[in-house]
Image (cartoon, rainbow, N blue to C red; front, side, top):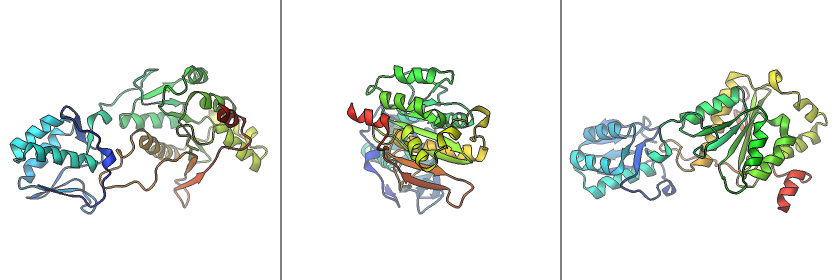
Amino acid sequence: MGVSFSAPVDTRALGALQAQDWVCLAPAAAVLLRDEEHVQFGLNARQAGIIYSPRASQLVQILSQKTAAGVPVQHLVTHLVEHVELSEERALGVIEELLLYRVLHKRSEYQNARAYVAPDERADLTLLGHGELAEELTRLFLAHNVGVQRVGDDGSELQFLYARTMGVDPRPIVVVDRGSHTRLFAPALSARTSTWIPVSISDGRGQIGPLHIRGAGPCPLCMDLYAAAADPCHYRVLTQLTGTQSTSRNPVAVSATAARCVGVVLDLLRPHRDPPPGVQPVWRPQAGTMLSVDVFGEQPETRREFRPHPRCPVCHDARRI
């Protein structure tokens, strides 16, 4: 049996594969019979991986049925040996190659969909905020089996942040539509977490970032200072965008911004895992990057880089610690 991939694979995506591990079919992959001796993993033949096998139809049946909901590696190896006439070593090699190409994923990364995770150590991330954008983000995270801890909007957000122990919990915090509260949230975020992703929508355009990753990148107050330098009335206007005055209610902008934000966060949570088979990402999330999502403009997405503002008191204090 031979395997042909038309795009490079990332060996960092595999890790140590154990017989007791579970694997499942990746969300963007498909198992298709190309002809009597070839199996194809997607519609685009130039991009999809192709496997040669004299027993291609049996291979399609096993991979499509056994991996849809997840299967132990040893169980899948046994079926490949019995029905596709592979040696155990070659069967394991095929599974490893499909993992490298992201046709298969380890089941631990795609467990059964979870509901909201109340303050609970099992959550993969915390989401602060409410409204249409926060709800769409939560829906998409759960669809990708990412456990979401929602913190209420009744004043408990700051309590939650200050109760968090810096350095102990590396999980990211997604901060939704909190631009009008930067003077409150910037010190709390800087003091209690190392990775956060601000996301908001204003005037029908989504803004994701600037990303603060593992202690690097500007804080929300930095962006206020940059904006105030260009418009002295910025903060006065910004603080009025709360409640019914929110500009994040355009459903197209909400959907596009939420989808792009989830893609960024997934790349932070499980790098080298989520892109579809055959797709090599051309950009990875970097500290200080601000992504603008404009579904109505000529450029759907633009990126800018920001550094901490030289006169930001929050970042200045953080550098002294």
